[in-house]
Image (cartoon, rainbow, N blue to C red):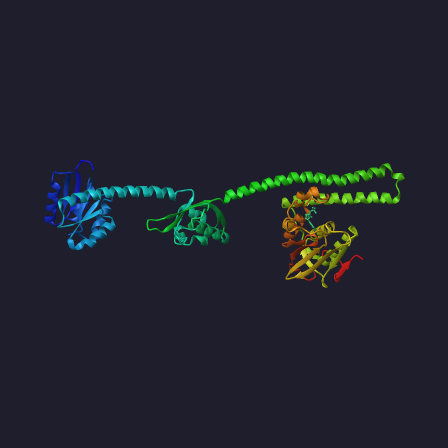
Length: 514
Ligand code: ADP
């Protein structure tokens, strides 16, 4: 404290007490004091309003104000001025309350001796300064935390929110009053809840657990946000465990990362597709070119059977090329969102019978069976597209199974859905690949070890077409035993008397090639 005089305002209505204090403070030893006196609160407040007072000595029982409210009124007038409360011997409780209310110290009147009074005044001034400094640093800290671009939260040892800043409220979508006191875990999805609890237990046990990890917060509006947490566990002055954590919303970053990966995969697929397409087109083209040259050059020397054989090879190669081009076109239409369905009431029974009849002609070696219920199956659908799906699945079934083996097509109506299955006794699909066969260009990965014969677009197209009808498609398979491809389509009501898309027999139960 400097040697500048300390200006003391004494608000006291008892002249004897005033006199005593005046005498003590008038002593010349030590810090000089300048005393101003007021015997009523109103006079004291007027003096405070003029400014320049370093400390107030305040009697709480004045003619114009009694009790704690006297202190409150003084503080309201001069918030930054320290107050030492003067109290009577029998009123020490009130003095303690006054200190809790913000007074810096108290003295019991009648016991006011020289040294304690001077000491108390200096102590009150220093304490007030320290309080102001603490308040200022707390304020600064609070403003940094409040305005942080990261979410910041403090949880108690039961995961309940003690504090959350504005950004945390924004990320969670909950206003602060709905967060505080709530269990943090209820704002997470199930998988994240388990993760957070596991990490917390690990760290409490003192095991090494990364402080930074990711999980999902479910916002008030139900939207899931991916967040990264960076947390530390602390013990407060009472020894209670608390978690202080920084929460970063990384949803957009994750989205972007996924897009980049997808984009890179797409790029890879596109360049793979280009080389596969050229390869796939070249094979039938070579066949067509070779046989047609032979037919032109050796026309006269070729027998009828040979000519028939060459022409049929050209025919098959042309079909293959047409199919490839059709698949490519459908795929690009699908990607551009241009694959439109033309739904009409369709006689699925007749459609399947026609499809199977043609499949039997294409692969005479296989035994193709058709199992149908007695009543005709009807569906509001794009018959051409449904036929494409069935054709594709039958062609795969025959392509990936030995001739003379059986391919069974079965259709039935169940629970307002129409279910169709195509079962073969072929090579089957490994468990690992089961989930991938419907992916675009799945086959490309396996190309080099396989016969040329597909772009791996067929099943992806089947899936898109079935889903466009509101249905589902899946496969069950066992390596070496065979596969069953299933798809179901929702049966919308078709009004009686509506026209059928295709005509045909309706009561055929089972067909197979003899
Ligand atoms: P692809 O044009 O190559 O036949 P698909 O999309 O029709 O393309 O099929 C993708 C892959 O799924 C095939 O390459 C094959 O490995 C596998 N697959 C499809 N159908 C069957 C089946 N019935 N039996 C065994 N594997 C099959």
